[in-house]
Length: 416
Ligand code: HAM
Image 1 (cartoon, protein in one colour):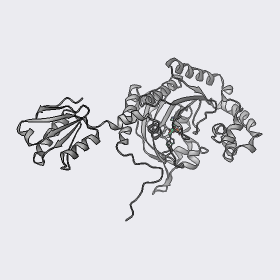
Image 2 (tube, rainbow, N blue to C red; image 1 turned 135 degrees about the vertical axis):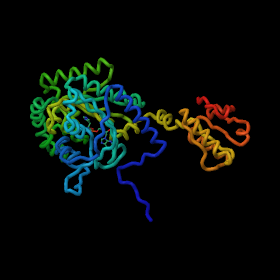
Image 3 (tube, rainbow, N blue to C red; image 1 turned 180 degrees about the vertical axis):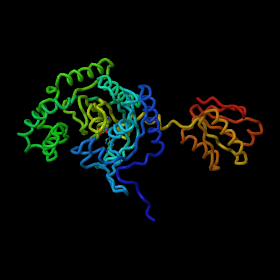
Image 4 (cartoon, rainbow, N blue to C red; image 1 turned 30 degrees about the vertical axis):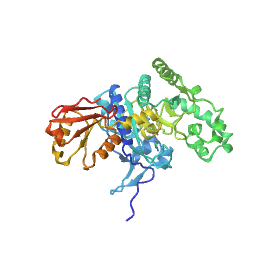
């Protein structure tokens, strides 16, 4: 029978690469708690309307990338393409705003978008992200961006650039849209078909089109930063001052508008030069109107999400090897199957003392067992045969130095 294959755009994460994922998850959980964020776990599917209203009908995500289907009751359901809309829904549905003035939440898990798969672009991909709801302080933006940068630093990702912009509030934006449309109007013949559509529905998106012809035409487009009203300008100045104070480097990119409709004021992206076409590692911004637009009480908010596949791709080679090579503390080589029970007792004693231990289960020769221990990256190998048991000892070999020593059978060894 023909073996079945996985769906295009999905991945099996196999060992030892799964160790990188485990390591990343640990760093994310640790850093989020360090900054006072609590994990929220929301469903992986929602009513389609949530994303359509939250992310925006005209966006690429909603108009062409969602996995949408009818359930048995005939309701339209969508696999979540991102986490923000779901978190906002959960925030309102569970009245989190009335339980506490500030909600600092984070999540980690799979998202689904029907995009054309390529390096760093999957149909099921994983994000971690945070959402802070209940404050319009620019320092919430700064804290979120800094946390994002720190996680990347801890993961050994060095070749990144942080780009920030402000797309203002609706008032500033509607003035800007007019002057941008005026600028694009005389250039409509020279831009791509998609951008001609964007000109009608969402002219800001013409600014970040990747096509060469559009980039060229948009070179001298008016800047949104010159159209910010007093409040939005002040907010942006404070975000920059906050980042400066902590020594976080950034570049102002007036063309950065992001592909989701809910943003107001601050937007940002972190890109990595090692990734090729899909160079955006993470992105986010402020969304002060979304909670209200989804039926909740007016609640200012900020958040970001980072793509885990892209982070793993951008991880420094040495750091990757170091994490993937980190093996168990001890491999117990069994020299004679007759003493297997004793060997198991020893393994359990070691494990109770907190060591990670593997024991030979295939009855192989000592040579093959040593090869296996080497391959698995075990730090030490215990050698146990009838002779050792009769003498009430076990032999321990340090795999890095080759040193060998005997220990009393009931003792726990010091692992280097
Ligand atoms: P986003 O820019 O759509 O923002 O996605 C964030 C990150 O997810 C991207 O920078 C990228 O690393 C990763 N990503 C997106 N699509 C794919 C894909 N098809 N394959 C692999 N990785 C992908 C959001 O999702 C917003 N919810 C961020 C946010 C949170 N804004 C406010 N709060």
